[in-house]
Length: 131
Image (tube, rainbow, N blue to C red; front, side, top):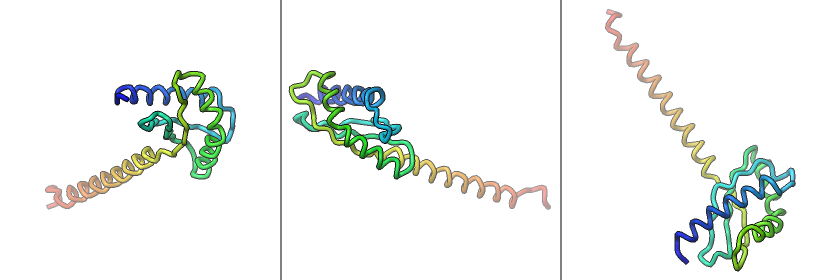
């Protein structure tokens, strides 16, 4: 299987699964879910669907459970929309990269604030008008 075809298929599955989650899945426990990426196995029979879920940890766990319950429905809808010999088995995984990136941004902001405070203190200590 060519890597290009696999990448295109992953993007297509991402779009379709996002659409199914947005328009078709009616389970309120699913909440606000964003499909961030899809990783297909080499034989296209297994798909890891990475999702970002807005809300508290408890709500995120509820949403993942709701997604797991809806997996059969999502897979059947996927089969109707994509022409593949085998519709991939779907496993939903929580994508922690967004939270990780947010954490790094907070740390960087804290570091920048610390540098700004040090710069202000240096300016106050070296003010030539004080003498």
